[in-house]
Image (cartoon, rainbow, N blue to C red; front, side, top):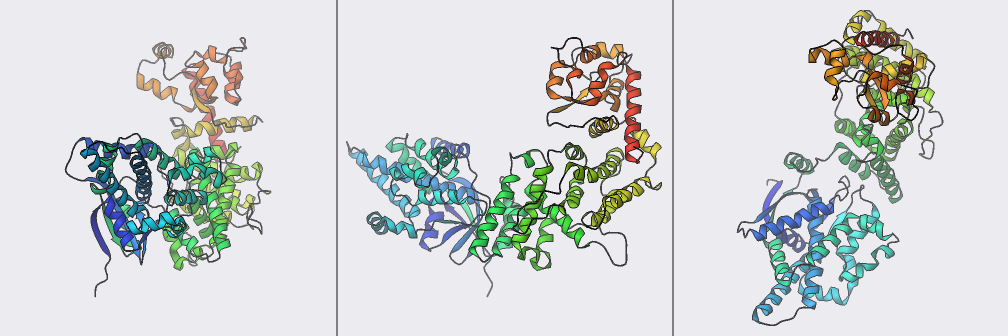
Length: 627
């Protein structure tokens, strides 16, 4: 007999919930799912859409997308549709309270109003059959004995990304018989009202209740009918989890696909048996998620996201275990598995020690939180994104968690970070100059092999520095003259940052790279005076002028505040020192800008070319280890 794997079904919102109730099934939000993220603006649009559907008088149903469920016995795991299912529950619960209040205050004055009242009673019965998973008799029993609500399971939320207080608030909303009983929700849960209002379960429910309360009896009756009987969903039941996830990722055009981190974290959590360890894992994973989520410094600064954490540890682990090195060859296999394939490989052996693995992930996050403000790190991050992999690989061994799983940062200093950042800068500066990509043998193959030394505590930094030096100076790799020809016509920005760093270092100045820094054109590249500036420069052709002003020698770092003040002023205005109240290069912490205040002449094309020559030689000396 064939095993049933997929069962698609078109149903109304009412049927979607009611059929599950009749079968004694209930929804489960899997461990890997994200927290509930719908905001009031999305709830507002949901109600707007239903109102528009009603006002247009359309006979055809209104379609609310696809729900994908992975069915296991009475449990229906929400693979796709977690957000909508939860939101519909909140909307139905708000609608129950609003209709209940309308009926309580209803005044019959004619036959039509009598029919309307009966209609509202019918709406209320249908909604209550859904939100309490019972019939009229069961609802009467619940009203007599509210303790029966404690047995009610609507949605079992196992997401490790949803704070426990949020889960509790949702449970209390759906198990409450009277709206007024929610007035003490904050106090009962020992949280402030502002914090309660920031929990989406409550804020969205409250929004629905407030908006629907403004409807008249007739309007709320029509709204309830259309929501329950005319709003439809395609519900796809699958009895195969991999198949369900694959369908989700292919059908999910509006939402985000399940990430590797979502699935891997669920597998880790599933391998924990003790409740105390589950709680410990949730706390640690919550810290990792929080530190790398949108809006926080690591994600906002494009330094690290959750998938980056998994990738970086994969590089460390594979290097520590020499996974990609063959006994018969000194050349590494640079083919890298996908993150999920790596962690699920070897029958998921890595995932069988979830707390140890989570501590390693947490170490990477803590490491980035510690070093993200170092100027040398900010500089390195201006270059190819892969530089991060090798920086972390080297530093990871210095900050292993102590016996208690706490992060030990005592060995991490700016000097230590600079010791590895400098050789990486030398190599990634070349990558910035040449036409070849990171995947070429001169970069990726060398770095994969070197990473085995980077993760090894027995390898000294002098040996690593020597390896980089020998590789860069190998005549078969790069010639100084070839790089110089490219640098003389270089127009991008990463090397402008490197030039500032090298100038400061060579002059014994401290290099400070602030977050609010601009690329300043000494000879302006645009502005209202650009035609005069171009004429003064003796250049009539627009493209020729653009090539000149975008050279390395004409671009420097400057604080955003100063740059906004001086705008596209003339060189003499930018470099003046006599009027102290007027902002200019004299106020900059960047060494090149400050040095230009004593420049002995105006700034012409020959000055740009001369400054470019100096910058090029400065960078090449650094790359080839001459400075």
